[in-house]
Amino acid sequence: MKLTKNILHYNNDNFTRLLGYLTIAVLSVCVALNLYAIADVSVWRHDELYYQPDYFHKVEAEGRWLNYLLSEYLAELPALLCIVVVYLSIFYSVAKSAWNTNRDLLIALAIALTALQFPFLSTLLFWPATTLPSFLVLFIACCLSDKIPKIVFFPIFSILFFATLNNLYFLLPLLFLRKLDARETFKLLTIWVSSFLLGFLVTQIITYNLTGHLIEVAGWRNPNPITSWEDLLQNLRRALDAWARINSTIWHMLGFFLCAMWAVMLLIGRRPQINDLCLTIVIILAAVAIFASGIPLGLGVQGRTSLTYTTGLIFLACVREDASDLTRTLILILCLSAGSTLAISNVQTIPWYAGVTNEIKEEMRRAIPGYLKDDVTIVLGISNRDWKKITRKIEICNNLTYVTGEGFGGGYRVAQAVKELGYRKVGWCLPKKCEESSVKVSKSLENCERRIFEPYRHKQNEFWLFASKDYLR
Image (cartoon, rainbow, N blue to C red; front, side):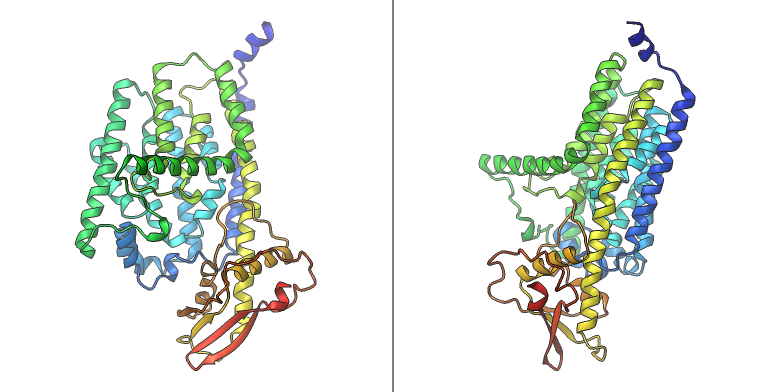
């Protein structure tokens, strides 16, 4: 009984402060290692803004009119600069949200640095220029959140987020968690949801004025607009499937830490107050909103767009008003252990992407003669099956490990390596049996020195590349 009483009245501010400094130092080093690894990337994702000669189709399919207006300027920005700004924006957003709630600088910094370690964020960074405007909007929103009324704040930034990447809009309620009561919670949620709908409506109007039609969702997204109860049930299943898929990745890495933290909070935390309940409700709704937003059109949620969900999980475990010394210590332990665990995944995921894409780029450089002019069309006569075998063989030869994130899929996802060599025209002539047979390759290292591509000149204005069968044996 005496031991329990001593634990509940734990008070060692010096230890907590030292633990906070250690957590911040370790996680800062992890962020620096992420940036160091990303600096080695020279080939970005296939639909990154750098490789889009005309970004207007993104307005037609997704309503990104702000990205379109800025596309000429964004295309000139160095990728690493974009990534640093993205990191600073999400760091400031999460840190300010945590600080507004718990008024503890060490805890706020630790939570923000933990949020930067999620592999889904690292995956999103492979679209550096595409994501930059949305994170700049997030940074501006955080700067203005306590300067303008909510009734003005949420509509303005809903419109701006819909013009870039609208998923970051769901982070905004986390800025207003302190001293919530039932009335303030209802008011906050009402303004937040209605402003989201307003942003969608304004984006449709702007898209119509620019294109002559409303947003037409791309077919590859497999949209399923709700026209019946069956459609509603199918879209709900899609949302739940996406939630389960993302959870399977998160809980594999963090399940133990999060469950332990929630259990400890229930056992030794203070008796819940009304503001604790309101805070929890807002965090949960902000976290799951990304899944709910896709239900009307049946759009799935990919890992790279689930940043709001992962941030919500961290807030649910770590953000408390007026936390005791023991609670603060436990939060720092969670941030240190969870952040370090996530960082280990990044140490593998980022070098994996850089290693595969850089190898393909260098092999293409060797296969394409240097005398070709940049207006020549490089035709890739390689099936999707062989592209998968090529990437798998590169992983084996270079000891690269794919942990989480987003794979390459078909060959069009790595063809941007040609564009990085200065050739803006890429053609396709896929063999007939693109998807047949196994994509397994030998784990032997004996063919690693063979050339990946076989060059073959076809026409004066075209240069063809094929996959080397010797390499894939």
